Amino acid sequence: MSAPTPSIVPNSLADFIAQSTLALTLAPTTNDDQPLVAANDRFCRLIGYPRAEVIGRNCRFLQRDRRDQPGLGRVRAFIAGTGRGSCRVNLVNFRADGTPFVNMLTLSRICDARGTPRFLFASQFDIGTASLEEADGYDGRYRTAADRIRGTLDPHRLQLVGSVAALADTASAIAEAKMLVAQLDHGSTLY
Image (cartoon, rainbow, N blue to C red; front, top):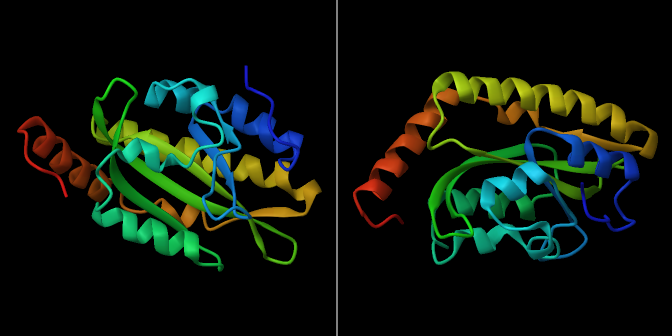
């Protein structure tokens, strides 16, 4: 069951996020810090934090002291941008118990009818332990979710932009994640 979602999020969008089997979050673009206004159960299970400790916070807390990861520059550039598009990066994040994992983060914008970004829509996936088949399955579920969410947003004159374009080269993403996991397993300093 999801926690109450601030009224800025259309109920149909909040319901979609809450019911998804993908780890999903939502943050408004109207706040410079992009605090989460929605996070589903799958996301909370992935990171090990209860929803009450996640809502109102920026997801950067999951990075702990790993604030200089190469993928973060791409995330920052995407967030600072205003145009269409999406962003997919692998980041080392930490669960509530301190366990690191490689998070394949996919960010897209939800824009209003004028093209003004209103929300950052994010999906997270533990790619470090995934097989190629699991990652391909995730990509398929994400495509289906992106298609379904478009119908949910339409009555509110909102649109999801660029999300499917982010689903490129799963094999490359897995290879990068496996390298990060190997570095973690061998105690190497990451970033």
